[in-house]
Length: 154
Image (cartoon, rainbow, N blue to C red):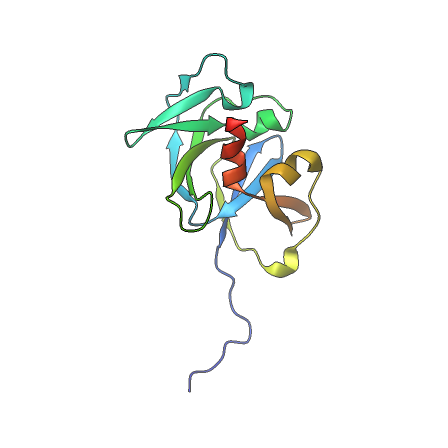
């Protein structure tokens, strides 16, 4: 019989994403597919400020979302782009989108006992977050990417 580990080491199961001015959110580790440094974005005329460009990736044009703009802070200068894969519903094909970041993502470990209420801007986060957890005294929303990218259709 194998010994049971009493204090299991938490492994990274999320990425902490920094959008700007201390606005952060998290996604699961398998969601982020690639980080692009200094991406070449293509403007979309007449599009809202939070989704005013697309990025060409593996033969696809991906919508680029600027969460900082949605949260009402200065839009991001496109230095880092996170390519994400998500599903609208279980069993559906994977869809892809991109998020502008202010800093490289950080791998973190999150557990159920860190659950907390949504942070400031709850009216925005309630539209785009599954739930929230506390990390170093700060409330971090967990992004629901299908909601983030489907909001572009509205």
